[in-house]
Amino acid sequence: MKTRNIIFSAVAGLLALSVVSCSNKLDIPQHGVLDYNTFYKTDEQALEADAALYLEILNGGGLGWDYWVRLCKAMLTDDFWAGGSMRGDNNDLDQLNEFRFDAEQDYIQKMFTSYYSLIYKANVILGHIEEEGASDIAKMVRAEAKVFRAYAYFDLKTMWGNPPLVDHELTPSEYNVPNGTDEELWGLMEKDLTEAIASGYLSEKSNADDSSVWRVTKQFAQALLGKVYLWQGKYDEAAKQFDLVVESQKYRLMDDYANIFRIGYKHNCESIFEINRVYDDNAQPFSMYALMTGWRMDKMNWPIDTPMMNTGWGFRVPTKNLYDEFVADEGVNGYRLNNAIKTYDQLQSELGITLKSPVIGEGQFMWKLRILAEDRGTNSDWVYSANCIWMRYAEVLLCGAEAHFMNNNTTKATEYVNNIRTRAHLATLGTVTLDDIKREKRLELFGEGTRFQDLLRWGEGAKMANNGKIYPLLQVNGSVDYVDPANPTYGFKAGKHEHLPYPATEIRLNSAIKQNSGY
Image 1 (spheres, rainbow, N blue to C red):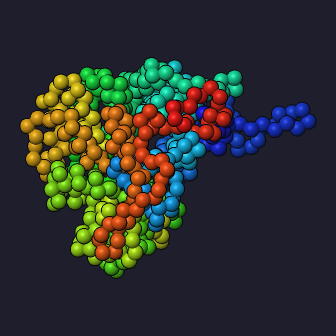
Image 2 (tube, one colour):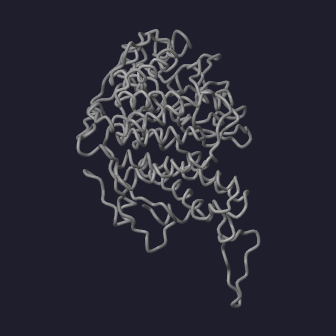
Image 3 (cartoon, helix red, strand yellow):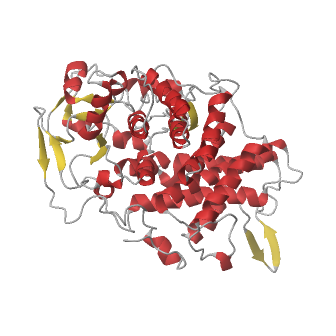
């Protein structure tokens, strides 16, 4: 790890550690600076430390996890083209999408650093807020820190394989931390989540319609623990955790799939974990992710009354392969499809939008996470305060279906899948196969950052074997030209891309880390 940056440096700015000056051999404390040794003693200070966990996901890497993490994960699948004004508009995204990245790749480094920054902040809390004699607030903060630490390690483990395990603040003699083992990493996640759930101090909604709870909840911890078990093949334990979330009756699928991610539906009945963006037109909160992934507006003709916000840079473009799988399952008029993707024909007929110059893509445009003009700020297109939902109830049902299926309970697996299909206005299935579950998960959760890790777990990386062999240009008349970029290497390579590379800067700082194969 970048230990000096990740493990130690952030505390000075975020948690107000002590600084002491020396004059005439006397230690003179600086006014207005809190002493590191006396911080974390009050509930107010505990909550301040806790806020740093949420802020890491909101602002991690300077632009937030939705920018670094969600964009990176989207590129590493068969669901999206990198997009932009042209190929090379953002070389980092092209590298990811075409599997041409190495250990110097910026998005991968920012993800890795942000995960360990979150772990560091959790370790600070758990190392300085004593459990014995703690107030209820302090116990809640400790429980949340354990959930956040497990959340970061889940992504690190499932994408990097065996990253270093850091479960406390490191002393200088401990800076060089080697790769963790499967047993250590999964064991820490299980321990953290089990203890947090059992503590009784995690928040819970009063019912499915309670939109007042924004903190990490017991049910989020249970769902995350279910995923930890599922990825290990502990199907019985996984199914029990997902069932607990379902049986709590504190969440349900929204009837209106079209509005799950809209600004007016924050903390809806389906949202299990999301991070708040509070609207303030003067402070201009914004989502760089939203601007990156909005349609490429400068290449489009816009009617005056268009409902879309006319600011966007056109990255993360849905593939025709994804669209075709929607059509095979739902037909071209499918309810879920038409609330997830719009074709170029639909842009013209429904919105009056046409191209004035070619854009990267095959005629499919993201609609599920659309940015509407009514949701922008009053003073600036840069003000956009939609929350980022990191887990919703649909994922619980689909992970639960897989766990039950693999545990030979096809009845419960079918029930969970049919809940998803009913909301999608599709016929229910008499029984499900594993392929049914995989297809529903791809369609239901596309663009939400789950597919890359699923494909790795299922051993289906070959679905990205041709990523980067060609790229499409959608012409003004709706035709598509496929361009050969003459990549010397492209696509997912077995034996290499099952894991991401440890960032080169981390390797240089920590000689104990063994780099993943192929990098």
